[in-house]
Length: 94
Image (cartoon, rainbow, N blue to C red; front, side, top):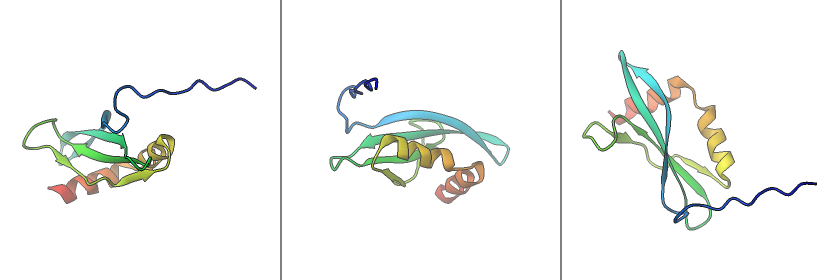
């Protein structure tokens, strides 16, 4: 059985990494979406969704609504979201 290569994090494992997601359309406008992911001190992966242009007054963020014991499980939760879920999250932050 071939060995799996070890995955070594770059920098501090608790530092958030931001990933671009597919934008959504809301009221006729495209809204940028990003996912901020980090591994907490307790070893649990946590993430939040960031909506809108980065570092602007229009940027909105959820609480850390994603929580999983592995990074793969967290990403599966994100992939399970549909556009209507993301639109409802965004609408709740306006």
